[in-house]
Amino acid sequence: MTRKPNPAALLGAALAVAALTLSGCHQKARSSTQQRSPGARTVGAGAIAAARQAGRTVSDSAITTKVKTALATSQGLSGYDLHVKTHDGVVTLTGSVDQAAQKALAGDTARNTDGVASVKNEIQVKGRY
Image (cartoon, rainbow, N blue to C red; front, side):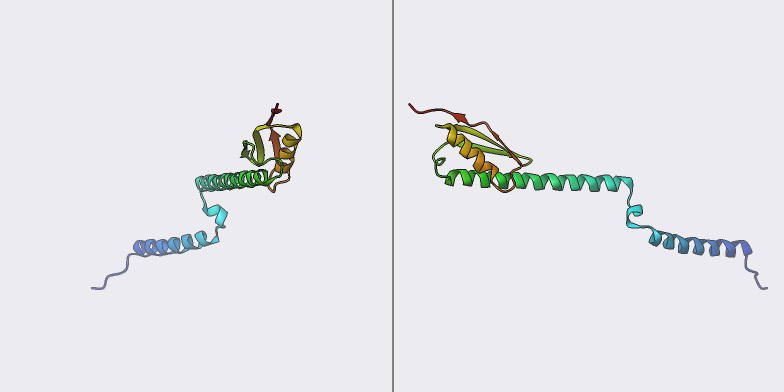
C-alpha cells in the first residue's frame, strides 16, 4: 500500500520555508537606522552627550592649566596668589594684586590663552602702603 503525501502538510512546509527565506531578505533590506529601536537611539544620543561633556571637562582642565602657567610666567604677576577656574571655556579669575594694571594684565593674559571663550576678572586690587 502506497501512502499519498498529505497536501496540507506539504503546503504548510512550503509556506514555512518561504516565510523563513523572505524574513531573512527583509532584514537585509533595512537600513541601519531602521534596525535600531527608539531606545537604542536614545542611549546613543546619551553616550554622545556624555562624550561631549567629558571633552569639555578635559578642555576646561587644559585651559585652566594653560592660564595658570601663563599667569605664573608673566612678568608683573608672578608671586601673587591668583586662582583660575574654567567652565565651558569661560575663565574666572580671583585673588588679589597690588595695582589695577596687574588686574588688567591678568585678564589680558587669560583672554589671549588658546581655548578661552571669555574671562570674568574678579581679582581684587589691594594697594600696598
